[in-house]
Amino acid sequence: MKISILTMFPQLFDSFLQGPVLQRAIRKESLQIEIIDIKDFAPGSYRHIDDSPFGGGAGMVMRCQPVLDALRYAQGTGEGIPQGGNAVSAAMTPAGRKFDQKTARSYAQLDHLILICGHYEGMDERIYSRVDEQISIGDYVLTGGEIAAMAVSDAVIRLLPGAIRDGSTSEESFENGLLEYPQYTQPAVYEGESVPEVLLSGHHEKIRKWRLRESLRKTLLMRPDLLDGREMTEEEAEILEELAKERK
View 1 (cartoon, helix red, strand yellow):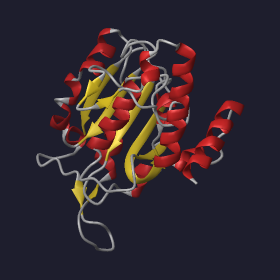
View 2 (cartoon, rainbow, N blue to C red):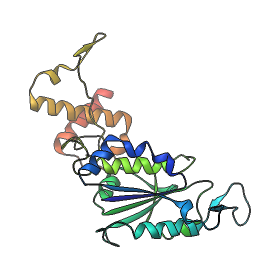
View 3 (cartoon, rainbow, N blue to C red):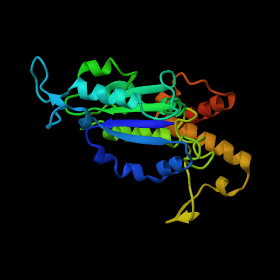
């Protein structure tokens, strides 16, 4: 797939582009990535990309012309990338739909993902009407959309073939609608605290059951909202009933 990121500050991505997972995906030919400087599409020597909002108010607003010209450029780049059906453009904005693991998986199936980083007080509303989606990474406000675009890109890239070891993502938090079970490594005892004995037993079925139980326990304690409306297996329902009794 190809990821295009439209930004006013391309230098912020210098370190991000050197990340080992991203570089591995590029070497495996699973990923192309480009950083597009919106300022390159602004007219005049001053590259004027922002202006005061009509109607007054504090701060500045990103003008639609440079952003939309950059978007049109991104939509036309990339050899072999089909236009239209298997491409998505998304604006990073706190008003957008909450980004989650399900969205990351759907994005990882695309041929082309275009992310637009907002700044200042936001973008001209006519930009939002010309993108496919508006995406938020949480209910808070950042200085700009670059960190959000990195978070979205990272979540997507690690799902691409060859980016990380096969099977490493299948049991992570949110993949099955639950938080991940606790993990341990050497030493088996540290400052008097021991690794749960079942994990040292070598008994695969007992380990599986322990991991499921602890995954459900952590979800119940920390993110009970994830359990609302979730379709439970018979085994999961029994464990949750037991956990509920333990808490009484």
